[in-house]
Length: 382
Image (cartoon, rainbow, N blue to C red; front, side, top):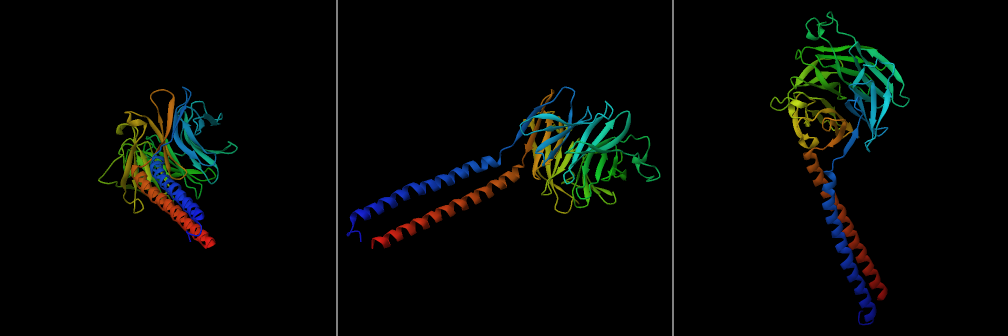
């Protein structure tokens, strides 16, 4: 066949040679590029820096997925502010009807009903829970958190009227809209329904004299909270209020913890306080419904600087853990994304395997197309 038309044969051979020399290296170059860039992207961590006024002291951190920004409470003002990905800090809610000395140390979002639940503290008045509409920013209710009655549970140390009950953290049951508020001086928990009715829900004496600092609703009929003094993880039944300790590893404790959050995969993120060196946290997992748990991984924010003041943790987009902390002693604050090294390592291998599969698929498609092209041209020439 080639003898009948040397020019056509040479032209075809030249074309195939060029395709083989150009396309094949391009495929392998693309494969190597994806292998190199992919893991680097998996390990990237987003950091947001913002600055507040001298009077404002951020406390607590939540992610508003609808508005695509973070919200922070304040230890010094009845104010809730937003923080954008670009670090823009601005007031979202300022409740002028509250006393000037009031503060909002803890907040939570009812995503289904677009409500903000805010703990309100004031030294001159009883503690309250406020609810705000996130769209109109109008206050829906302000409910006083009642003191426990001795008649309710005479065996509970929390029922002692001499013990001041200061609310510390709040979480919400997305199914019912009910909010749960913990006390930093005991294991007392208030419950506030969607209409604002409040009562003492749990008054356990599981570990007397140790309050709950940080709470999250699991969604399977119970809450998880952390005791700040003992560092124990506590599981509370969201129906009857019964509480029990959750052993972690070989009796591991999280003394001075500043919060807990739960991801969509069931991983709990626990923050350490100043007693842990500052800026340290742990990823916890449980395989038996939090009867017991284990440490999956740990992390350090702020480049491991000692004495970092960590103020809150939240889950962004159902899976990304973000931590709020002060950058130094001034008014500079940081929201830092934290990533488990173990999950990143596993993700790298998955990414590499998927990339290899895609690259090989393109390579075999290219080979099939070239074979079909050559076969078709050969038939025409014959």
